[in-house]
Image 1 (cartoon, one colour):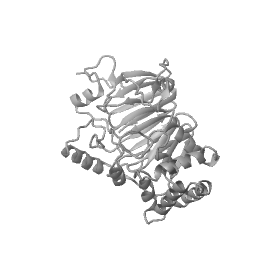
Image 2 (spheres, rainbow, N blue to C red):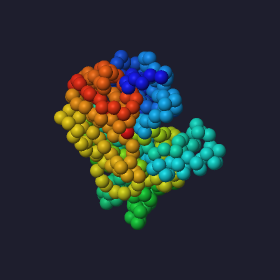
Image 3 (cartoon, helix red, strand yellow):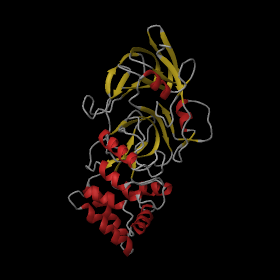
Image 4 (tube, rainbow, N blue to C red):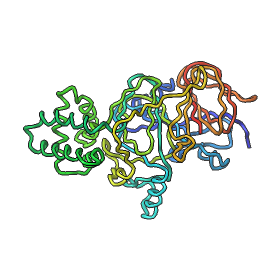
Length: 387
């Protein structure tokens, strides 16, 4: 069996409805397809394992894992959003293990639309913006700030008794001991008064620039209660190279833009609106972190002049996500402790270790199959996901 360190890999972009036409092709510098390209998965996840190209004894990365006993504790993605994704949160490892076992016991098929836990793994994630203007909703605003906006809305929908009554209920939920959680979950409750409130708020948002974001979200997801939920979340806009860290329980939704996303190798998503998919309010309540405020931006550490690393909180603890992301712009060297995946998004690089080497022009992705000291030469933008 080959002991080669470097293997070129590839995959087919996923065409989710919120994807950007030619999004992945634009990031990789490849020929346009004219189709929506929402995500490119680089990893061993069984739902869409990467293909190994060239001469190798394995066709895909999940086969490589099975046959070698190696594991990738992460999934690397190119994400390209033209429209808002669903409001969502992800479980911790303990929550995922318990939920997966529970739904197995209930006999819910893994591919059932109403299944919540599709594997026993956590899905913490970080995302690095590739261009200026990447937008996301991430974490809750303070109850006081939300109340202030609801006061403005109350003045503008005063003539609509049904909507005004629902708005008063929303504000009342916010005043409780766990007001943020209570108010957010009430918006997902299916209460009969919610459609009138969504309609009234959408109408206000269409003429009041203070709520322009809600109007934009409503264009993609008309009549969805998640429009109201978005008002409770922090709206962040990233510059190229800035990152967000989204641990278990964080409620978030990417709105538009392209980024490099690194996450646990999981497909466990608890949705809370802006989607036609299954919403499990009970399970969302179990995993939701309803703390107010906090800055989700992840500041990188400097490795060398040309290399930075995005290292999430929790490294070396029970909450360790098991991964980190290196952003390389010029020559350097990395001592990798295990398998890794590299992706070039700009310029041209070469990776070398001992007598082995692989060219990394823009758009190429590669598996680094085991621990090694890797020399990097070139200039541009190269990302390396490592455990």
